[in-house]
Image (tube, rainbow, N blue to C red):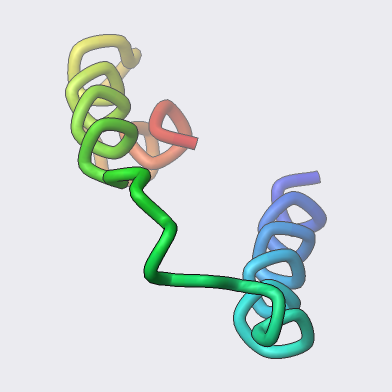
Length: 61
């Protein structure tokens, strides 16, 4: 199930940056990714069962 999720995520990102590149306007994209990545990284390290890279990765996901 994890492989399907990763494949779907990769396909979505690939389509955004290749197939639909003409519809993306970077000048008007004002969303700062740091506001999304930093809190999820903090939560992944705080809320997990074990401090292994695999477990933290699953919590981050």
